[in-house]
Image (tube, rainbow, N blue to C red):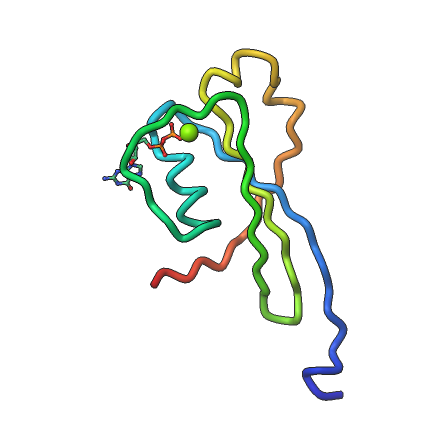
Length: 95
Ligand SMILES: Nc1nc2c(ncn2[C@@H]2O[C@H](COP(=O)(O)OP(=O)(O)O)[C@@H](O)[C@H]2O)c(=O)[nH]1
Ligand SMILES: [Mg+2]
């Protein structure tokens, strides 16, 4: 069987970014998902999320959902223990 005939698998994975305010969570998410970096600090209110599709070896298409949680949210409505955390290995290519 040639490569093109190999079965393509689809996965959805969620990454939740946690950390102190102004520690760089939003910058990391934007850099990863949009390949951009903004120097201006704007506090995340509530929750933002970013999507990025990557292809891993073995014809595995992965849709990553990056959840970027505002610092004030953790002590508020969202209880962190209710979030489903998945630890994954990401292949980050640094240009
Ligand atoms: N020099 C430098 N500044 C950064 C880096 N990551 C984030 N920042 C800056 O630190 C500030 C807070 O970043 P932000 O991503 O909004 O933090 P968050 O509150 O954890 O989401 C912003 O002004 C960013 O531009 C980094 O790797 N290097
Ligand atoms: Mg933020």
